[in-house]
Image (tube, rainbow over all chains, first blue to last red; front, side, top):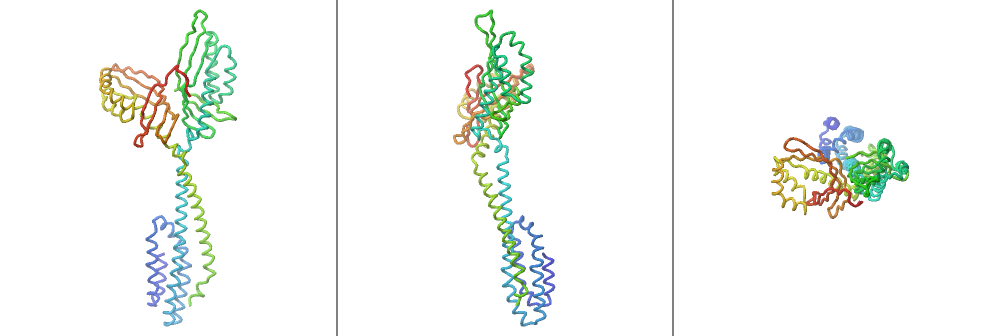
Length: 258
Length: 180
């Protein structure tokens, strides 16, 4: 930009009148440049250098040349016209460029802001914010846990069957292993297990996966024929459960004791 | 005089391009602005932030209230008091002297680690929340024997001066009646 200006001034240095006429344009340019924000100024410089090369230097240099050839009286006449005409043109250009730059800046700032707001981990977690989905996953998981961890000698197959509708993936394998271990003991000692979901809290929830913290109470009763009263013991359990929404309900895919 | 030099044909397309650029920039700015406005005024986003703040503050407070070193009882109890508000806070302040004596006599060091926590209820207007916390408490006796105990707790949080503090804390009962 400075190189261009210098070239035009050296070209016109032969004529003092034109030089004086062009003078107001230079402060205009610098004034515009300084009032701009630094971000705009940096994006603008290459564009302006390219845009102003044909616009400012090329048409005005021949203009200056013609005045030189045509002589003194004409030159003053032309001088009076050149600043008047070129002022709005530069202003318009500058205004347009800065408007576009400002709009692009504003647009990207808004875009960035919106992205930051919606992509936070808080916003992506629908636990409690989506009350319906939160209640649903809590209900499905709580009910499922109560069902699979309850056992009566009479409902031996029922437990395994319901496990298929509650569990999937790793949790299904864990459960099968666990059940295989304890089954013999449960049958032999005629133990009845009843499990209640005491509290359910949804830690994380999105469209089709969720993590929950569940407090369970498990009561085991031993139907001992030698005693009149069955002996009961209660135990507390804290589980973190991972669930996936599959088909029509939430299935438990992982269980960790806490 | 200079009119024939500055050909209108050379300016008009440039102006048109510039206008189109301006309009395009304006349209994209408006579109992005609308997105931003929607995101910034999304109630559920603000609610989600409150939920996460309540959970973080609640877990920290529960951990604080299950941590105490007999060598630094005063600092420990100061932390207890700064983590609580309401009835629980008053209770702690009242029982402070007696409790300090007990802990110094027992010479135990208690530390706690939160295993998992979840907010179960949140009223962000009233500034109240409930949470579940599963934690492991380690008690070390003077003869440096330590025992771990898993605990499950129910806490109630109240927002005071923009901060979530515990206003009630208790063990989740075992063998009681089931409540959602």
